[in-house]
Image (cartoon, rainbow, N blue to C red; front, side, top):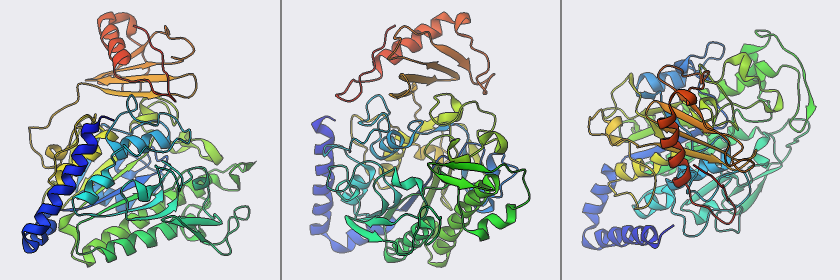
Length: 467
């Protein structure tokens, strides 16, 4: 990161301080005009896992209502195809060609990284993160309390976030033991429920606003288990095959368990929305919902059965559409037209500048994101990306670019820098079934040039490319 971005953050703080000295009443009025922001992130929820995106087997009435009362994005993309780099992009406004994390290795965010929480905190927001962090352990520069969050409750270690009855979680940098929890027996306090309770309490505690709540739930990732009240509606509804014991335990009814997990997620989004209405915060709160990457096949999950990637091909760890195109819903009464649908092409690195504009701030210089506030407000002056870029350091190295309707993927980049690009036209072939690279050599050359220049090499990630 260039010093300019850190200087920008300091300038925000100075500006906020000057406002406080000049007039407390004016500051209070300005704070009240800023919207509360709630960003809810599911873990490994596929593009087709919600009813409003075509899901037929799992009921998601609250998220479907969120879409009906707000805006549904058809062409929104995660930061990466696995969790840590995807969340890095979300927090810092950088794509994976520039972000610090480009794989699931445990490298913490750096002191110089400026997160959306830091930005909003300096602008007068109370900031809370509840759920899965995965961007730095306690005691490192990447710990959530050192990256702009007043409150953290959940998992700092993404590996421990695979389980729903953990022995402990963290409140800020203090360990909170969960008495009676047994990971092997899958019994005790269901951690997702604790996250929801903490999120509701954060909203109550900060009802005078403005507040930013980042709620990265762990459902429906990895271990398939959910309390019986959520699984009961699906028991006996699906064909089942016992998933044998593995790293994530076993499951007699994995299909019912997965469906129940998604329904519990949906239920608790509904609880949050109801609290906003009860407290009179509804009209001054924008709620966004998305997923960190495509669906997974771990722990007995069956994306083929549920058609979790909808019309797309690929799952988690792929850079095809199914690995990175994700659901995105935004609701803000009176500002976002209910029932609206947009095909604006956007990505996780757009969230930081969007939140900055919502808070009345300019975005830091040098980031990759573009605010999509004009799209939310139904305006025609929306800036558009020249391209979206992803790189994934694992599995031999992968790159992908979306430019207009063109999508290109290059596999095994580190093993074979001259590996040819695959090219697809998403307008005609959303399922990426037909590689047309041989028919469009000029487009291939243009995108290959982007792949060669859209990334910087770092001490951890060296992705050698060639034209």
